[in-house]
Amino acid sequence: MHASPITPTPAGEPIVLQLPPGAALIDLPGPLGHGWLVVEGALRLDTDTSTGGPVQLALPGDSVGFERLFEQASPYAARAVVPTRLHALPAPAQATDGIERARDALAMHWRRATEMAALRTGPVPDRVKSLLVLLATPGPGQDTHALPGLREIASIVDTSPETVSRV
Image (cartoon, rainbow, N blue to C red; front, side):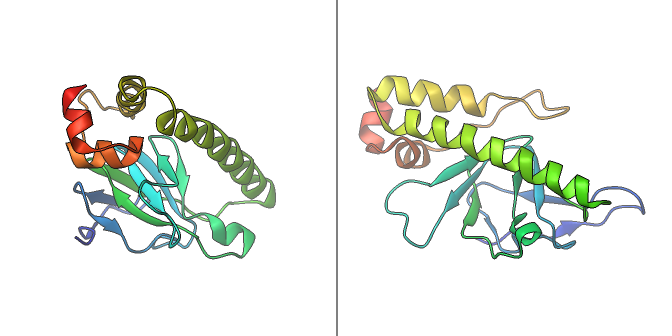
C-alpha cells in the first residue's frame, strides 16, 4: 500500500501527510528534503536486511528521514503501523539548529533501540504490554489510540499471531 497524498496547507502551515495502517512512506526525506516529524501514530522502520520484525519504531515526537543533514541516504523503509500523521521538517535555519536536530535524533535512536530490545526479549506478555504502552504515548491533540493488528504486533514483538491472541 502506498502513502496517501500530501495534504495541501496554507502558507506558513506545516506540510502534513496522513498514512493509513500499512501505507509505505515512499519519500522519506520529504517534500522539503529534511525528513518528517511523527505527530501522531507510529512508523515501523525496516532495512533491506531486516528479517522478521522492524529495526525500530518511530513514535510521536520522533524524526525520520533526516539523514540528508549528514549527506547520507536513509537506510530505512518506513510503513505506518497505525493511522499516522507526519509533518514535513523544514531546513534548519542555522547550523546550530541542524546540530540540535541531529543531537535530538541521536537521543531518540538510542531510546528507541533500548525499547526495541525490550520488545524482542523476555516473556511475550511483557513484550506485548511494553508495545501497547509505547503506542499509548499521545501525540499533540491526540486523545485516542489505534492498535495494530495481531500480525503486526506479533512481528514487532517477535512471536506468532496465535501467541499474541492468547495474551
